[in-house]
Image (cartoon, rainbow, N blue to C red; front, side, top):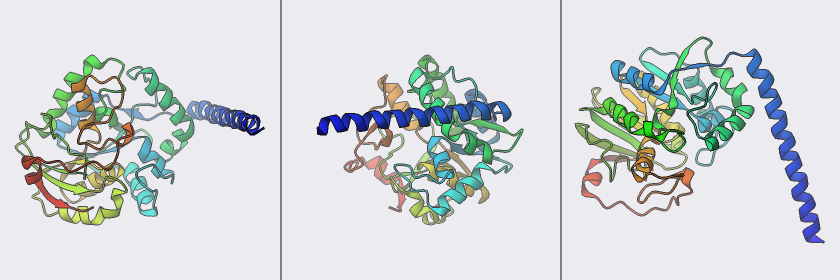
Length: 303
């Protein structure tokens, strides 16, 4: 009897889920006919613009837009300050600061089948939220510059894109603001062309809890330094506020993780040794990383 009732429950749940998905899809089909999609620059064009203009970069993807809508994500709660700040950044138009969006609103032929299916479902639920906070006729840049391997159909492009990305920090004094266990560049050569590396560590989850402390620490750094940020949605906001404080700050997100997968020729998102990769189901309880060079680069921790 219990098995029979469970089957009925599961069947009803499947029907409800499909009905909700169909309703979202119908709404999206109507909405995208009456609202022009945003113009998003190509990946190569975005990298060139950052290099030539030394601009600051805030990136928005699926997690950030869920927080904008007021929905928690697995590693960040949608607190009032978080919603307000991300909405401010998404609707901003500051000289020297660019807002990057996932290039999902039109042609998605660069992405593989799995990624396409995900973004199709995402847009059915969140296209209205995206459009609500975007500026009409504004040119946006490409948030996928840091996501150039695992979801790309033609992975032969990845090598050239990573080489081009390295121009951003070529011969620069860089300061990472990263999650405690992100460990950007540890064990690979992604940032070896930088002049120097320093690290400010924040929490791996709910990083906005240390937002003011991270900002105060960052503002002790000389203005000529380049901030590279990998701290989830918190990095999106920090890049904006650091730019307003007179710095160049680039939200580079998962670029190190993608580079690791590229070096491994991974076929799917997999955990990495010594690095916390939330979306690959990695355990947050990673042990300490015993490396003298890495440890000497850490100038502050706010956990």
